[in-house]
Image (cartoon, rainbow, N blue to C red; front, side, top):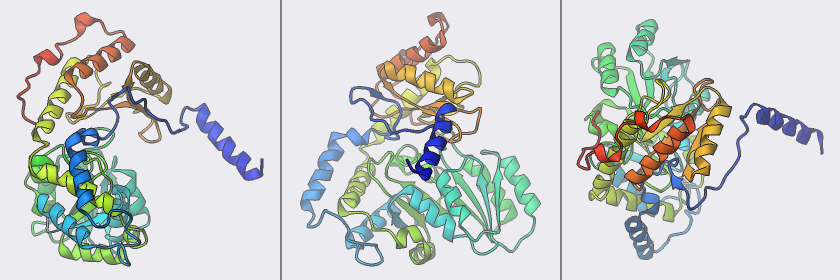
Length: 409
């Protein structure tokens, strides 16, 4: 073994000793999914599968894109899909990227001009950090998670400036599951820039797409804030059972990204079959086929939260389908996840440094394909792990109405 291999092995061994070593696993096909981001269950939806196969059958070309979009990878099909996505989310334009990571990195690395200021939620996704790291921004300032008062403090400290100020947030946070106080953030920026002079909000809707808003349009549309947001990001690899992402914004923003976003310029574009998958997913959102699934998803989310009984502070304060049991340390969350895995539930331990030390958790995602009985079984197993007595448990699925509307912000 050469010197480099020994060094790499030593680093991995140290990570193994502190329970931080990552590894690839294959989930059991018979286990119950409480982990994936397939919130609507479309990855196993037979109607979407058939619609997709029909779409492929109707296309002259389905394989590859043959190059970067600026060279040979572009097509009228891509243009038409972008128009469909923009209209669905009530935006001026949409620009497709190969992934949400590429879209965030491309947007945040190129949008801030020299000396501009980016203020970001402290729990913002790693892809935003990657973009900010190589941007020309003069200052990168975090604010406390979803804390509008702290954001106000940061803006006050910045004071009057002729630089552009960007506020980067997510609508639903991937590890905490809580929903951003977007109305309050918009109102705060109006106080500083009543005519939208140089304060701009960038919103990542990755975990809200398909889950919130009419037909799954997202939180921004649900709140009617389309005109207040400078740029929106929607991804397709979660609720839409596809891959890729789109940045929504003005025609000028779209043209600017085409000219300067390196992940777009220097990557082979999405293949035709990938574009077809995205189109079919949006088709079923548009025609309302997922509305019943949305309702069910929010029903079982409420069921889970009403049924589970754990010490205060252990359960994430989330009303979204992203739930979590917080334990202090990587070893405890690995133990709980392993216990649930052996009982046939797919859940994953989220260890530091992915989340802050002391905030390690078992991430639990609910889906449109999960049944009330499966939720009850998961809760019962969690209670068994913590030795929660049945007499202390609250009513489960029988107390949850099947006619509840999706959660409102």
